[in-house]
Image (cartoon, rainbow, N blue to C red; front, side):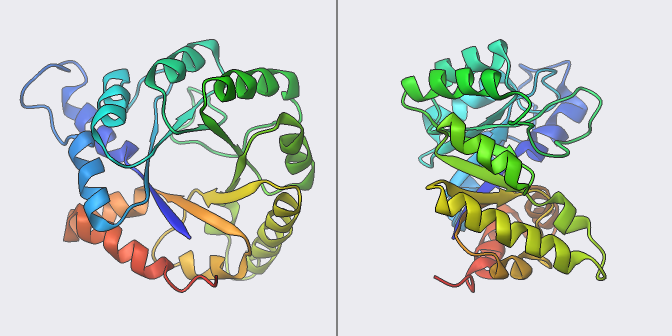
Length: 246
């Protein structure tokens, strides 16, 4: 199981001080440096989300990381013409289509592929024509998986937020949802990834979910890095994931 490290919150910290001084030589921390540190810690890919309001990652970050980090870049983006234009310029290895609203603090819930099928289909087609592989960030619901299969996207990323926030009395039900969703997507020939709210404590519970190819994890790694450094935080997560059955 591979580890994609989301470094958005490195940019969040930078923007807290330097959003009005983007060209300042003092602007820190650097998402580019975090990407390199993640690689040194054992990351398999780097995930960033350039949002419509540019609240953390900026366009220049996407271009810099794509050009200078030797790991594959996974660009999360909303299904909009603006973001599609950016993706076609950046040319990341992967794009993950996500829902996006300005009111949310972070992405909450999966993309409604079923309800936006024509729109998502057109976006997937345009990205694939540019040789960019596409993932759809969806809730672990069978109708969304069925709709995702219709788009021709190579991957889905199962939203694990409900699992991560579930209490002890219901977490088993959320794991069961993920198991069923993963089996269904895998049977449809779709690569299965997962992400949102996964941390050092709960990651082992995901070992019950078959066919997971990659976990995309960010907040907990950035938080841990404040104590042990970025490379060590990534290395610790890789170690925590190492028990996933082949």
